Image (cartoon, rainbow, N blue to C red):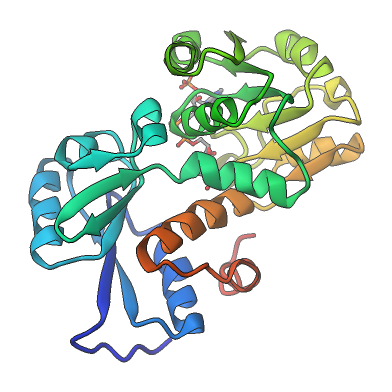
Length: 290
Ligand code: NAP
């Protein structure tokens, strides 16, 4: 990949640590190049204690914006001039836009997820969801589902306090949605998926380092009309998605969310739509996995 960097090249960054494994530079730089946009996206490994200096540097160097990833998604909020309503409810920011020196924070994870569902013909309004997991990804997704009019969301997690925490945040800001929480146990999961439209998996079980694992012991608990959505994109077909496929369920992996959250950020910075089809078909081309 070659770039012609000029004095007009607009700068975008991503800050986090570790940053080496991020797919974002590849996604955005490919899209800039494809559309012939004079932008460049640069990864920066920023330690927790260096966050304020890194934000100041971004401002001084007139970055158009940047992504924020672990472990800075919450702490970054203290250094921004403004935060969008959904990011405020979620309590985390993954995208910052520099509007002539004013830093505005957004969270595109939940919106990117909902967009990926809609791309598969699944609409949130009045649907019933079960979310397995209550980490950062689950929180963004749950808040967006609630904002978009989900009828009921049940959050199941190994550490139930974290599920309660998300339910409380949603209950305070978006009172119309019915939220339940429980432990992530097979009997409870079996009961809750019986009456759900979509099961969303957002734990780390099944990721490349734990690819033999699944939240489900016996796949017969999955009704064939259930949509099973796994936020994991590497591997592309997790054990859970294989179990769901065996039962005849519609399955969706996390690639759509990964590209969806990037596409929303891309448009916030450039005001141009990301070429999603092209990015989806090329981003993992030179990877061993997926
Ligand atoms: P996180 O904040 O670290 O949360 C991890 C979640 O996994 C927690 O609910 C945790 O439960 C659960 N968990 C971990 N080990 C477990 C085990 N052995 N048994 C049961 N539950 C376990 O991580 P995150 O950022 O939310 O990410 C969660 C998943 O979403 C990951 O697989 C990640 O790859 C995926 N993700 C995808 C995208 C995308 O764009 N597609 C974006 C972000 C994340 P406890 O609370 O009990 O520890």
